[in-house]
Amino acid sequence: MVDYIVHFAHHLQWPIEVFSGAGAPFRICVMGDDELVAPLTARLHRHRVQGRMVALERVNDGEMLRARSCQIVVMGDMDAERMAKAVGALEFFPVLTVSDVNRFAILGGMVEFAGSGADMALQLNKTRLDRAELKMGNSLFRLSRQVN
Image (cartoon, rainbow, N blue to C red; front, side, top):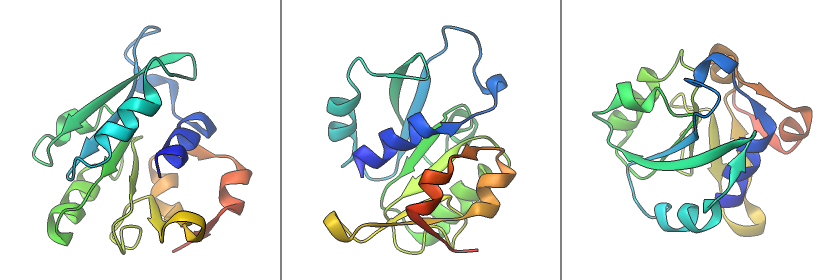
């Protein structure tokens, strides 16, 4: 899943106004379960995305104002109600929401990683991607299945 997150970071386009300035970092935030923090930290050490240094941050689901300034929010294991609230709070913001939690895309998340290993499949919620004004290349759409 970590490699897919990095791939999305490189192949999506965010509106330029999401960055506070030329030197602003590309922010990837983790919410919920912390199991991805260590692999993301190792993979993204001194990494650049779209010419920006990557900043990996931990956010709580009660910090939605802070999460809105992230470019990607990775949502770990949390109950469906908390997840739906968090996803809803980010709905009209240019923040890519990703998770491997079952039914994440149906709950309003943008990218769900279904399965694992060689059997991993991407499920996209294109409606949410469009609302957030995130532009995804055709190659990513070909790798995925749309849930709406």
